View 1 (cartoon, rainbow, N blue to C red):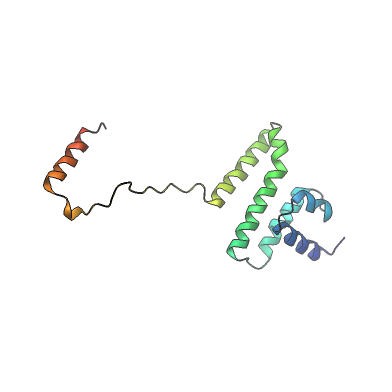
View 2: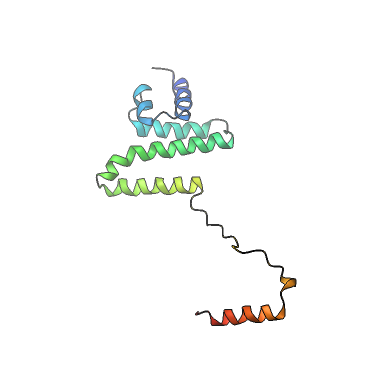
Length: 133
C-alpha cells in the first residue's frame, strides 16, 4: 500500500481524470467508495486552491461520485438515501447554475420613450385598462 500522502495524491490525480470512487476505493485500499469520497473532499480542503475551472470540475466529480454511492440504495426505496440523493442533486443544480432565474428579453423592437406620441400613449393606457387583474 502506498504511503498515505502518496495515496491521497493518487486519489486526487485519478479522481480529477474521472475515475469513479468505487474503482479508487478498490485500487487504493479504501474501505468503500464513501471513504474514498470523504478523503477526496478532505484532500481538496487541505491542498492549494485549484484554479476555478479545475475546482468546478473536481466539485462536479465529487458530487457525481457521492450520488453514485447512494443511488442503488435510494432506488431501492430507502427514504434516507432518497433524501441524500435529492440533496446531492440540489447541490449539483446549484453548482451548475441551473437554478438561476431565466433571463427575459424584450421580443419586439426597442422603443425610444421620447418618440412615443400622445396617441400611442393613450392607446397603450387603454390596453392596460382592459387587462383583467
